[in-house]
Amino acid sequence: MDLEQAIYGRRATRAYTHEAIDPAVLEAVIDAAIQAPSAMDGQPWGFCILRNPALLDRIADEAKALMLRNPSPGLALHRFEEMLENPDFHIFYHAPALILICSTKDSPWSQIDCILAAQNLMLAAYGKGLGTCWIGFAQSWLETDEGRAALGLPATWRPVAPIIVGRPSGGEPAPPRQKPELLWRD
Ligand SMILES: Cc1cc2nc3c(=O)[nH]c(=O)nc-3n(C[C@H](O)[C@H](O)[C@H](O)COP(=O)(O)O)c2cc1C
Image (tube, rainbow, N blue to C red):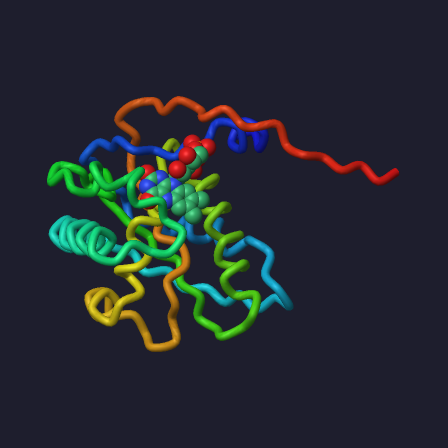
């Protein structure tokens, strides 16, 4: 796929078919992720891949409950409260896979490096006809001791980017971009 087409066409996908995604395809998008630049070539990323529907359902339920109990600072809970209280709202939209990108090194740049890898992963998945969505709603729970234990994360790994991946079951409208502020300093 043309790069411009990928950049402009990728959308946060919130409806998926039940089709399982071949592990080789997930490994291919991870390979694209690790082509991202990283500070001092640190490559401080690890990828935890979840495909077990029961585990994904459990994480979705626990993450919702935690957010309602203890909303992260800065999250305008009132905007999401009704959605999170709805038992039918699944934070992973029943996607067949979640790739959690974790920073593996304690460096000031490792989160940024993982975020660059995340964008590569989302674009590469789109190029393969897959949908993705970064699920910030899962973040707080994944960082808890319970969340880390459920995933069996190594002690040095820190969750950065929980990204669902699957075959889209419908199109997503493109949220219009606001005009960027440009400060030309010629
Ligand atoms: C850090 C981050 C967290 C996000 N968390 C969620 C989330 O929890 N649930 C969700 O449906 N979308 C989430 N999104 C997707 C954004 O809502 C989406 O990217 C934005 O509305 C722009 O749409 P687009 O990606 O289709 O351009 C998140 C995106 C980012 C970058």
